[in-house]
Image (cartoon, rainbow, N blue to C red; front, side, top):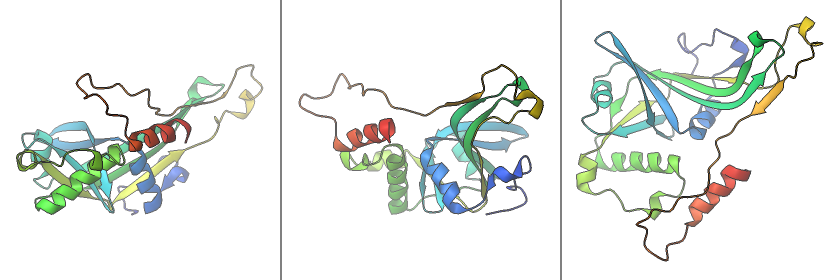
Length: 217
């Protein structure tokens, strides 16, 4: 996984190159940012994603400029960041954040075989909400034709992680200012029922499990 362009140069001790760490961060995130260049113009597009084994999947409309461009084999950079806390130091210059992030490079490939596309869409859906695929209608042929799926191999990636308290200058530790960490986490609220939901349909088990895990896990 370690390569010249994935090597962490700024605070290298925070760098991680093992697949277990990279996968754990990708699996915990929901949104990635995809960077690419077209005609000397840089773009960074946020999008949902899913992972299966060593491939990252993205999808969207065939009319999407990003998806049409990425099919041409251009180099892309994908990042995922999880914000875990605000690090408040005694010095304004030493404030920081605790985070887990992944950066990966590569070229995307079109997923054209129908069974593979179905599996990719399953991975995308289950990444966002585990157990959801079984509780929904399968995509029909028209929907599949109206969806482009790309796969990006995860073979050139690195993770960077910061944890722990602030790091102040030795002379500042006696200053009369509060210092520490404010933990942050993404937490779901109460489900908002679709006004058109038919009577008698209760919250499914997979959603109850998701809410419990995210709130108390």
